[in-house]
Image 1 (cartoon, rainbow, N blue to C red):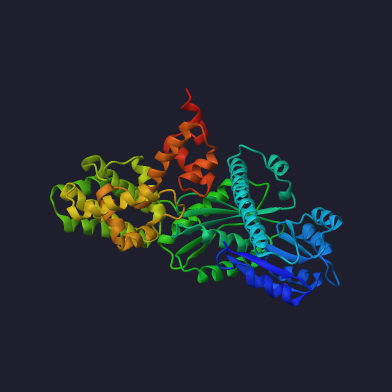
Image 2: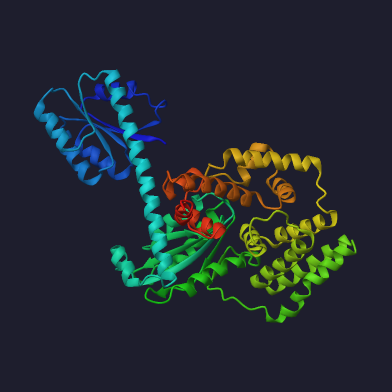
Length: 501
């Protein structure tokens, strides 16, 4: 983290000396400018983000004390260090009233300056860390309240009572967001964009790659330009991102249908040439119900006859049908049927730690191309033929990957890309080898390890849920709690309480 520093003193040589004796690079300090009077300081603050200001107490036009008082009221996070040639108690008391960080006497000694700066940087770090924790807690609480309203566990009036700032908003909108990146930077970038469009929004993480934004609007006017802004946003993104945009609705309406439509709209990423789908309506699969019931029988027959090419052709034929119909439900049910066949008859995938239905859903959530899903199914079919025959080199690589995850699971940005980079292997190849050996994806393994460590920490009863989430690598405590409950059937808090009995 860099800290931006502004130096204000009406004496040129004092400003130059300060610039010379400050250890800029060593302490990650950035020189953001200098001023001869308080008026110039305030002008600079309007255009730049400043963390630390050195203020001479006696300056023309606007004094240092008056400037410090203004900063206190309008920029309370900025740390002000007063510079004075007067060892005067009244000056010091005035500086204290202006909430300055410290008071240095001229001529300024280098060791005194360094000591104050180190204390100042330490204070900024602590405040920043506290603010991050506070923001995460507030984000978690808002997510819980919004979820309760959506599921009709809380009334809208109760929500307004809890969050009065939402009272002026008359409309709402859900935006589904799929990102191939496991970093939340694209998510934060979209939130910043939406905030510039006269919308108040909150995002909820649904899975490793899927988020849902809920936006609140005072009028429908921002919607007129939202599509064009989203297209520009997508064009600027280097990672694959898919957005599902649903109807605007009056805030007093039932939220859940709009939420579900936006969420299901994300499944169109498998069929759409565009990365933005608007107001998608889900179609049924009644015409394929009968053929789907024969999938298991056909798959088992092809494996028993040891005809590898025929099962590849069979899977390919089904994917052609799915592609032509552009139906996510058909895709979901076909993958479930064929993987159920593999699992029930050949124990492939092996060593599952969740139901086969949840496993299928997690696979679909991870990917965004039909070809990747088809390749995965063909790979599992080959394992059924080979009856777990794994090359020794693949086993070593998979074990090496697992060991790397075991050692680095606490890092929030741990993903396939940086694991592959660390081990010097192609991400796609590494993912395929790992899945063949462990029968789960790398991301699923990361979650498994994190959750196992989370249960150990919860049973100590020494940490808050938010602290446990942070310790095991989750940056979003709401998403951690949601995943934990899905795996263990209890919330983290309930799990910790149960372990006491």
